[in-house]
Image (cartoon, rainbow, N blue to C red; front, side, top):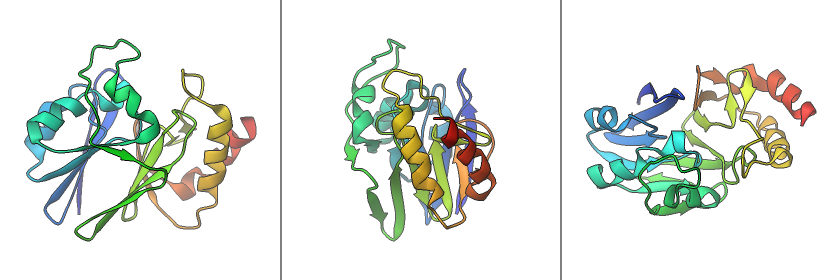
Amino acid sequence: MKLKFKEMGDYKTNCYILSADSKDFIIDPGAESASWVKENVKNPIGIFLTHGHYDHIWCACELKKALNTKIYIPKDDAFMLSYDSFNMGFKTCEADVLVEHDEEFDFSGIKLKFHFFPGHTPGCSAIELEDLLFSGDFVFNGAIGRTDFPYSSPKDMKKSIEKILKWDKEIHIYPGHGSATSLEAQRENLEFFHSGL
C-alpha cells in the first residue's frame, strides 16, 4: 500500500491518493488538485469525498469526467456537490454513489468504510482503509471541525465525538488539513472539545 498526499488551494486541503493492489483511491480532490491527481493515478477506482464543502470537492466533477470514474459522497452532503450553495464557482455534478451512514464497500478484497460523524456538515464522514482513517474535517491534529457554518450542528458533533471515543482500536488519522496523527494521540483533545459542546 502506498499513500501520496498534497496540500491544495488557498485552504491547504489535503488531497490523498491511496494505492493498493494496483487500485488508486482518490480522497478529497480540492482546488488545483486535478493535474496532480491525473499525474499520479493509473487505475482510479473512485473519488471518495469525506463531506461536501467546496474546498474538498472542488475538482471532483472535473476528475470524474477526465478519469471516467465514480464519485462517492455521503448522502446527506450530496446537495453540496450538485449545487454551488456558497457561490464559489466550482463545477457541479451529480454523485454516482450516495453513501449510506456507516456503509462499507468491498473493491476486490480491499474494504473501504465511511464512518458517519456528522456535526461539521450533515453527512460528514471519515473514510477507513485498513489502519488508516481519512477524517476530512471531523478530527484534526489538536482540533475538531468547526460547527458554526451553515448546516453544521454542535449537537451532532458532540454525538460524533462520543462515537469515536468508544473505539478501542489504534488507527492512524489523516485529516483534511494539517499533519497526520492517531486516535490515541487525540483522545485527550477529543474529550476536551466534547466537554465544551
